Image 1: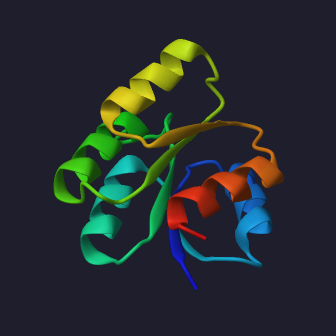
Image 2: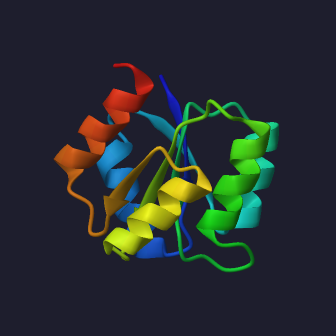
Length: 118
C-alpha cells in the first residue's frame, strides 16, 4: 500500500483527508512544514499532500526544501487559497499539482492515482 505524508496543521482538514484516503493508502501527519521536511528525510513516502499556510515553516518553504533533497517525490499543494497566483506560487516552489480546499474526494483520489501511477 502506498504511503502518503499529509502536511496539515488544521485538525478538521486532516480528519477530512484521512476519511478520503483511509481505504486506499497508508498515511502519516506532519503538523507544520518543518515536521514535513524532517519526516521526508527519515521516512519513505510515495507522495506528499502539502498545506500551504502552516506555522513554523509554510508549505512553500517546505516544498522547496523537500524538492532539493528528493527531486522525484510528488508534492501536491492543498490549500484554501484558490487564486491563480497561489497556484503559480505553489508550482514555482516545486509542487507537482494543486488541489483547492474543501477538496473533492473524487478529484483528490484521481490526482493521487495519477501521480502514484495507479
